[in-house]
Length: 235
Image (cartoon, one colour):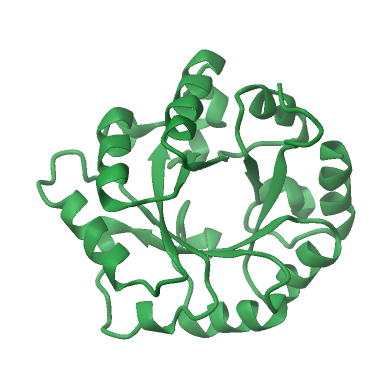
């Protein structure tokens, strides 16, 4: 169980600078930028990233989603344009049988600025989306130099994280990453009611999008009242 000193922190996924300001003002500990209409780690354009980074102004760490590795082709300058970003996320759906996914992760990690790190994203529904097995990804994350471990879901229509991972499985994955010195983040259509289980698993952060939006829709707009409620539930 988390102690007060080690309380679970809140990561809020936003689509634009206005939502980022709501998150910073009303208690999010981390700001994550993604476009949910483009998938679980929907890639955002550089202009949106720059706008969010400028708005946050260093008040919170900022992470950015770049979509799925199998679909991702750098345009030459996009990674260089991620100034002020602390973490970058790339999904690994469809990569289980690809021989070069670890090499491509390493390429992205090397291309990032010295201030940014690559997040290892483990999909709980990895069998469904043909992603790497957890141990395979954890081993690769160590070799690549990832400092953050995110456990999420790929297909949001198939339920929440806990429809794919039991508490013992989640706790095992969190402990395994924590022993390697990684910051652990848990996501996957979670609500306030799930926060206690995430804390019991020993995670450092819980990531939300839909739970902070009007109508619980991840494609909706961030609601100030909901962000405040989520923050208070962690206090």
